[in-house]
Every structure is written in structure tokens, then in C-alpha cells.
Length: 330
Image 1: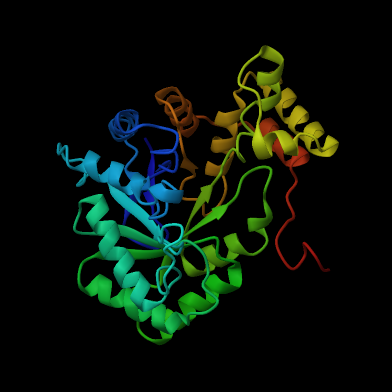
Image 2 (image 1 turned 45 degrees about the vertical axis):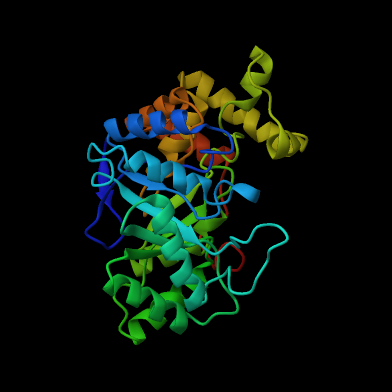
């Protein structure tokens, strides 16, 4: 496994991040534990989750699965950089109550305590805001975060799904009030097919020293060889991926992508991950394997070196918008 620093921090993290959104809803506890053990054995030291994972009536279930894994001992917690998120409502259906969502100081305080209990640990390495909160000022958010850092309950704060201007606003306010760190990472939608983050988010992250952690690196499976699987009788596309392929322009791009990689004898899913690892400022993409085999494929991507011919071909198929303001102005 290869490692890098998380943004401007001294924290050393693996170039792949293990995402756990499938743990509980699609992957049972025993299999989830096996995947986490295999990832840790391979050197993946970052586990990413969120308090709402498990979804619906099972919100919090994913954190509980991780907590029971930590309880097995063997240095699992000490070797893991643990990242979770706060924002979404943890109220059960029909039990909605004020201050159980968003980023008020009250909800942050309560949410941290609840996550620590489910995760069976006394601290969270990276505590991430799952979305911007248009109702809570950053002064209040940083006050709550600073207290948690002083208490040793979290070490760093990060963002997720933030636009570039909010990254700037958050860190300028943190600096103005003398907060401990400000944001140190941004978790955003970024992949070959969806490159709009290059306009504002990635430049803002680089300017303020945030590590970038892309989610959905295969764009819901669209970049994982979906057309090839259709032809060979493998798992067929469903949901949003199947819907996307009904667009003739999208299907043509994906076909060109798969043809390019067939020409070079490369696996689409591994290339999509390896491409992200060539992007400036990217710490490591989140991979969310449902099985051990999917984890093995993701691990191979870390060692994959893409030739200039392949990189050029990928840019021709998925050119991206380019940086701002040139992407939309002169």
C-alpha cells in the first residue's frame, strides 16, 4: 500500500479509503468484518462511515458494525484512521424532533456522543460535515468543533459535498477566530465521468491545504465495465446506472472508454481508481466493496501505472470542464 499526508496535516493515510455504506444494508456483519480485516491487512488504514449509514429504521447500524469489529481487538482501532460524518437526521420515521439534524452546536455535541457509543471508541480521527448547513453560521460550528478537539473526542474536521466558496468561507472564519485547524479534507463526487469538481472544489482544496477524498469513483458502476458485463452475461446495470445508459451520448462515451481499455488490456474499474490517484490534490478515493473480490480489484489499482497514451485517451473521452473561470468565461 502507498501512503500520503491528509492535506496539510501530519496524518499519514492510505491511497485508498475503505467506504462502509454497504455494511448492514447489503453486506452482513460477518462479511463486513472480513472485508475490514482484509483491507487492514493490505495496508488500508482509513475507514469512512456516517452516522446515518444503515438508513431508514437502521440508521447507525453501520457504525455499530465497525464498533463490534474494533471490539475484537488485535490493534484494529489503533491501526485505523476512523472517519465519520454528521448532518442527516437520526430521527426515526414518525419521531422527528427539532435539533436532531444539521450542524447546530447542540446537534454536533449529541451526534458525536452517539457515534462514539456506536463505534465503541473514545475518539474520532476525522469528523466530517456531510453537507453544508445554510442555517448555522460557521462561528457556531467551529465553537462546537474546538470544544470537541479540546476534549479529545475528535482530532480533525473535514467537509463533504461542499462547494469551493464554502470551503473558503469555512476556513477563513476558522482562521479569524483562531480555531485549531479548520477543514483539513473535502469528500466530494469526483470521477472520470463527473469532473465538475475541477472547476472550483479542487482548486479551493489545494489553496487551503485540504486533502480530497473522492466518493463514487466508479460513478455507481458506470465506469466498472458495465457494457462488457451486459455482453458477457455478467451482472446487468440497474437503477441510475441503467438509466444513464439510455442516454445515447453517455452510452457512446462508456463504450469508447471500455474499447480504449480493452485495447490496452486493462480493467475499467481499476483504471477509474488509478486515474483518480494521478489527480493533483487527491488523497485517495473511497471504495465501497460488497465482497472480498471487489476489494482485491481496488487494491490492484494502487499499483497500476497508466501510460501517457491511456491518460490522453481518457481525457479525450471525458474532457472535463476545465478550471474556472475559463470553464464558463474567457
